[in-house]
Image 1 (tube, rainbow, N blue to C red):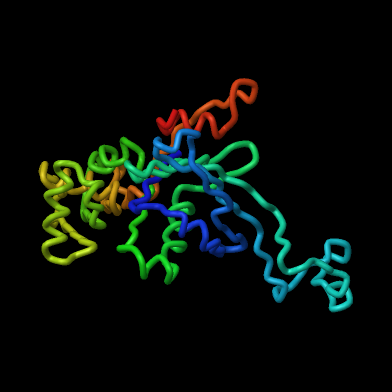
Image 2: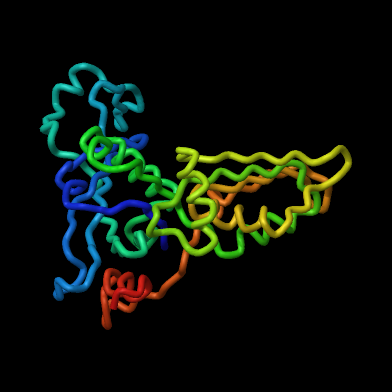
Length: 267
């Protein structure tokens, strides 16, 4: 239950109270506070609110008549515009030093896919107030630890696409720093590299290409297109295999938030 957010989260993000629409749902950061009682320890915890965002102008259905609701039916609806049904609260914890955000992707009541969570934060950070004050904020849902090995084990790789978002300076490890400095020197915020196999051949990535793919899997995405062992055309992406960590929660010994903090390494 992890996805990485490459940004310095600040109270300004919470104060925006931005409502982001996603299909029939609306989403926003509902709460944000220090995750520990000791102010010297870095970390934030909060909740993502998700609810049904009704469009009153869309057609309504009358379940009694099994037909579209009439104008007379609609006159009976007396729901204030500011009241929205189906509220779900999805807890998260944020580790500023690592730029990691961990959240409960699924439990008995709620579910939020990592890809949807990443899209929510990306759209939230497109707000003019954020864009005007901070550098571009890149969001990547971390892939499963075995996703790249599985992708490179594809019997025939016809195309390999590596899309790298420039990591933050304080995110970069020893290997990341090499690529980061190169992109920064060229004033490049995003690099997309595509490899196409020779006819009747399969791409065999060398160590440097695999290293670039590993960095991009955590700061962008990697996509391969090829054929499986049956010769059927397939396409795989690190975006389709997010990192999820199943955890059992015992309500008698702790809450989901307590477990989340422990798994994230905050406690």
